[in-house]
Length: 155
Length: 112
Image 1 (cartoon, rainbow over the protein chains, first blue to last red):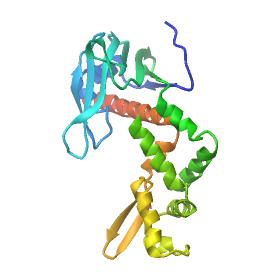
Image 2: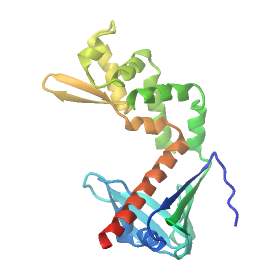
Image 3: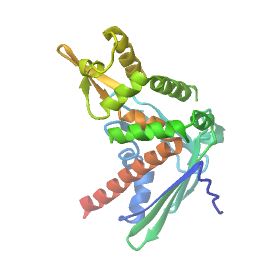
Image 4: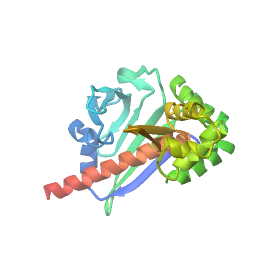
């Protein structure tokens, strides 16, 4: 399957990571390992569901400032190819039930590389109203410049 | 969607005033007390404080009172809210990949 890349809605993170593919796969699929990197510290992550099969539920929860765990990601796996690929979306919940807040599909791939693993995350987003709102406000011209200048101040 | 939209409205309402933009510009160079911030403006303190409250409520700045002095500082996190929608998502995934990389490379060292 070829992936059509839409620069306005998609992003790809691609990186050679100096670790064996099995270590990356395990960091993604072992909930206790996954919890250690999915959410930035000091917030804590809890894997509520990680049913690694097509249609399986994928749900992470977050706790900030030591509080109770609340919703973070609620989605569904679409494809799980051991040691090779994980595809999930938040457009569906476990059992392929349509989700309320569809937003993105992510394709995570793992390939061998002489230095370790060629790791990539290809994330496709919905052309949603938030984005349109963002653009209607003129981020592409006037406001963008204002923000840029302000950002330069704080950096 | 509603929540994000409301947040953006508040963010831009806060910027739609020259006094407030000047305050943000000044705070970009570092934290300052209310009296320092108010000094360039020919304005009664209660009116100036309304601007400060609006900036604080909209998330552009935060304030902190120590003794009798209230100090204001810019809220850097705000810039990621307005700095492009896809850029936000990219930053999130970059950070996530950083943490994953850190996790697997350190883990390898531990087991060697």
